[in-house]
Image (cartoon, rainbow, N blue to C red):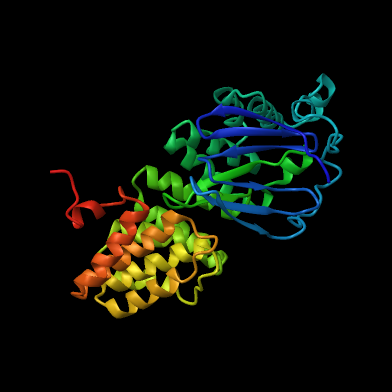
Length: 351
């Protein structure tokens, strides 16, 4: 059995820094997901549904496969036993030979490791010509609530995405970033084009720029057609933006094509497919899909199962099957009396 020693510091709401002997990781976003990049185990993705204890974990390989930086222009990585704050401290002579942009990035990362989010942003804004600097500057601005600045910096990182991660590797730090996908699902991403685009989706949504958010998600899906998280995020956005629009419903059904009930994330995507089928009046198909999804309860959080069952209640109501709808409502009420408007539908609401 091996032990990993690390110190976890809270540096802002939704922002923590993990300091480990072998590296540091900055975690941005709400609880429920994180990504650890680097080391011999490769990239480990963990997506969770808050409050349920369920996490969806996937290891994506033994490493990111980037070529080593050019030796003529790079500084050798610090010793792995040094704590992150020492790795990110530059002596006088090293500063003399380090480009100003890189120096600002290192100073910004050091301020993050010390818990100074605003101080870090001040340095990182001077490091945006370095891809990793733009990446961290955008995420830091996002967490400070400056969406326009976040959008500007993240777009710079997207333009220079081929160089993302190069300086993180050089200084032996591993940022871990979590992004909210739906109210129940949080995905974790790495410093790469996919991570930048997911962060931009969040920024555009907070700015009310729905079309731009959808464009980023569609680009993500083109990059990785099998990425269930991106599909789920786009379905959620399409349904919330135009829940009754036939074109949006058909788009959701296409996004869920070929999806099996393999995990909670897959089941959530099937829920949106059933909602779309229901909106199109295809009630039999919606009911059959929901019934099939509900057969698998192991490792499924209660909140997701309740959502599937509640949607099936609505389908039964649309089909005129009051008895089955009532039965579903009673089962939901027995598990969660305060769920949605179940008590009102059952005539149990407060008088």
